[in-house]
Amino acid sequence: MSRPFRTVALSCVAALVLSACAGVSETTAPATPPAAVAAVSYDQLLADVRILSADDMEGRDTGAPGGERARAYIVSRFEALGIAAPPVGRLQPFEAVGRTREGPKTFNGINILGLVPGTRVPDRYIVITAHYDHVGVNDGHIFNGADDNASGVATMLELAARLRDAPPEHSVIFVALDGEERSLLGAKHFVEAPPVPLSSITMNLNFDMTARAETDMKLWVTGTYQNPTFRPLLETLPAQGGVSLAFGKDTPQDTGNNNWVEASDHAAFYRAGVPFLYLGVDYHADYHRPTDDFERITPAVFAAATELSVASFRALDRGLDR
Image (cartoon, rainbow, N blue to C red; front, side):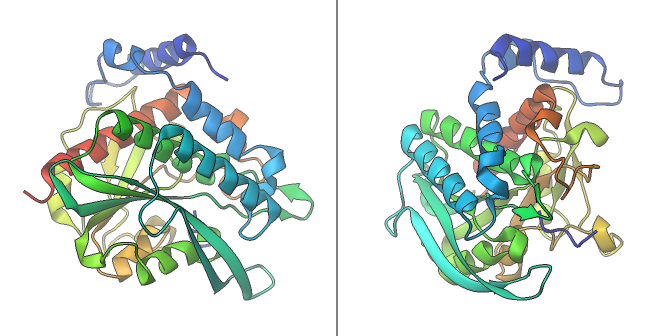
């Protein structure tokens, strides 16, 4: 995330999710029934985060060998899932000037695309985004970016797997974006050269930092202030494993680091006039630090937030363009 500078077994994950539910206060929305949780394996979800945030990815910086390795892995996952490339192709390369600690620099990045056709409104698109880059190696430390944003990519891949098995009503374009940490470079390029007309894009749903909700047990939804018709579709969704949706960080009263309208790739869509929502967790102590590692993710919390992300997509997909 570019906010201003400032193998677990199924039975284990399911048990953790259920134990998290038991500790929720009475004011929290009811959790998913145990049968719904136990029916899903989160092994691949966790493997995706672990692999993308391993030391050999070297922080996945844009244009670096680690970023190339991460890209190859994501392409292999789309292929294994049977997620087709859109007519323009799987890869969307770009060259753009981005920020570094030393000043502006030209980066060569590559977005990764996937397409799932819709059943009800196939000519209308929901664009699902999650950036796969992070900040690389700094001062000899690898910034693995497990939450930021290997987690969002893993959530996106989990959603892709679900849509393969139960197709969406809208067509869905998945975009693993490059260059987010270098000033939203991949997202800016996507809206400048979209694979479909911008007018056919119903919305952008952006996942950025979906794993570490322990701070407040909230998955924050930013963008309903700008797009108020989205909120009624989501506000009745029940909590998942103790993690519930929270709406905000998008009003004129939200200032500085507490306003996330421009905080991640959804900002490029917002500036282009495309409706958007951003789903992500609040700041934590490992944000943009070399300690943002896989081992610091609580599997049950991440699984719950991903279930809530999938439920949010389904609610939007059913409710829009009617």
